[in-house]
Image (cartoon, rainbow, N blue to C red; front, side, top):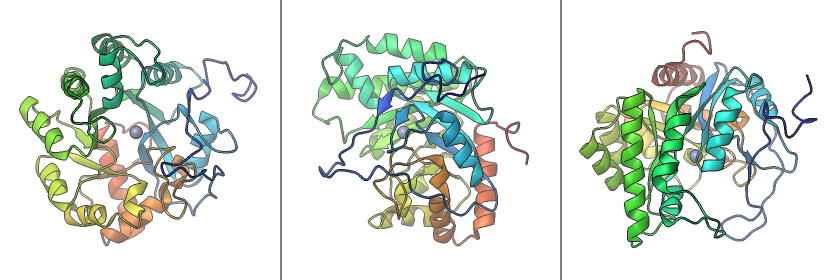
Length: 324
Ligand SMILES: [Zn+2]
């Protein structure tokens, strides 16, 4: 059997289908070097949200490289999320492949910003896209395949899609509601993308009834919103943003709710934790985020890892992957 490096077109280990941009949002050229590996965690945790379909870094890492680097520092399982149609298909193919690392699981959905594009019928480059209903149908079909443990990411994004764009707004809400229904139908957790849309996300979830296991991925709210979510039985997943200097509100949110309904993620290749903000991200950098989570909640690192790992296994009903 040849390695994924020698057979980049092998369906067993598909190469990434998307590239992360070289320029950061402020127009500066990014440092694309991979940060060094941190100290291993005392107890392993699961990265419950990353995007292995994305290429980043000066050195191209395969799926197997990401998994091996993560495992070496105590991240012994990952959930990879496909959020545009190409990535959705890629994720399904990876999980169905006999060469898929056994610790890997996945989720797919039509991302809110993609929902807006499907409704318009064209992507940013003007290429034709299938309609929103057809895209959601395809997601629904692929979620029934092997290795799928979550419907996501779905939700609302009023940052990249303007509130004033009526068609985009309607499409996002329609897609969000369809994914809520899918999570219930398939009895899967739901991962929510909420960007500048806390109130509206809450409203849609309340109106339709949130799935039993609802996760706010890359939680971005304040203490009050965190409390509202946790009181409703939902879970908050913290990414590298919790380590950012300007994220006092986010740390306040975490301190408010404590560890009980909290999980950890990378959202890699984005949101690299301090001190490597802006550089490529991968699951192996979670120890930086875990250190902040432990500190903010006043928990020792080992206990924080143990609690988060147990919560993550419960939410995704994942006892078979890592021993208790
Ligand atoms: Zn994501």
